[in-house]
Amino acid sequence: MSGFSFKKGERITSRKILSSLFTKGESVYVHPLRILYRLSSGDRYPAAFAVSVPKRLFGKAVDRNLLKRRIREAYRMKKPGFYSGLNAMGRQVQLVILYQDQKKFDYFSIEDALRKGLEKLLQEISGIH
Image (cartoon, rainbow, N blue to C red; front, side, top):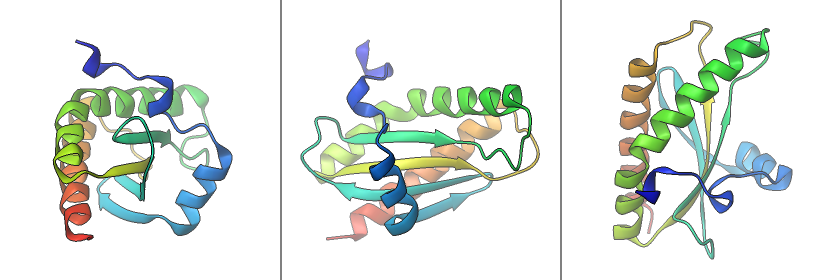
């Protein structure tokens, strides 16, 4: 099933878009993740995303990369449900998922937090008209 892969259009690579998300984006917080988002339009995919684990929290690159892999995998598994929710509302969104704890959580904790965060995000987006 191709719904579980990441195409280039689903990733945010532009520094301009990333900086606008950090300055003008809204946020949803579910420990240990903060999801910064902005509604967008004209994109090919319902959502484009990026992952960030701050260097000030984890000095070692191996720790940051481990957490980024866990977040990306959790997002990949929750993506079909998230996309169907966005498609039902006719919305497109750009988001950055930030890790915000000094403790390394296991995959299942991250997956649960991401699921709750995406549900909360869909509720907030549905409230915006």
